[in-house]
Length: 263
Picture 1 (tube, rainbow, N blue to C red):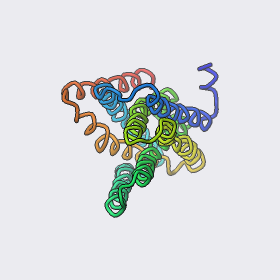
Picture 2 (picture 1 turned 90 degrees about the vertical axis):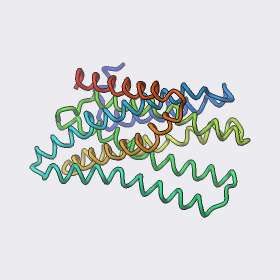
Picture 3 (picture 1 turned 135 degrees about the vertical axis):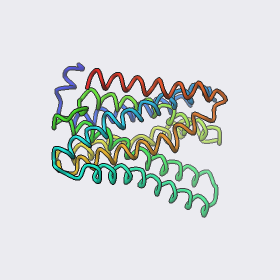
């Protein structure tokens, strides 16, 4: 079965991979049916591991291939990669500012909080889906680091991160009095944009090769922003900060080893 998947068109693989990341989000959200409260140590540890995986993936699966392709296309490598990387982070930075501004002006009814929660998480999941799509689309060009295995590993890392994210949305909603079914629905909804963004990312790469270096760097910048603004700070709210830091190193090491061995 796995060999069959690897023979599929990169766009189809990107769709399957991002449906997987969405599914993991839904799995995390489904914990609302089993537990009233999920142990914070478990969630923080998973966030730490996911942060490490995504930092490593940002370089080996995105930035390194971006640099290689920019050089092959005789572009100004430093300029293209730097602008793309910063643009990815800037998009999410602006999105965060907009959401905080709306939150300050609006009232704090449950419906408004739910709407802002969905919008905020959607903004963060779009570049994650895009990153997976770009990673799969770039495999057709035979770049160093741009392999199907590294693309699937990237999807796995994002999936790991999505599990506690789904839980972190559904459980607090349940705590506020939202029904279990609605809490689950909203929790899994946070990942539904990833398959859409994944297919768009793969299509863009396949149709317009010249923008690939920019898109790879853009996706890397967006991922690093998510890691530094959300994953690491959230995991460090744990009393065992040193253990959470080690989880991050473990995640980085796992992704590094997989990329070096399978790249």
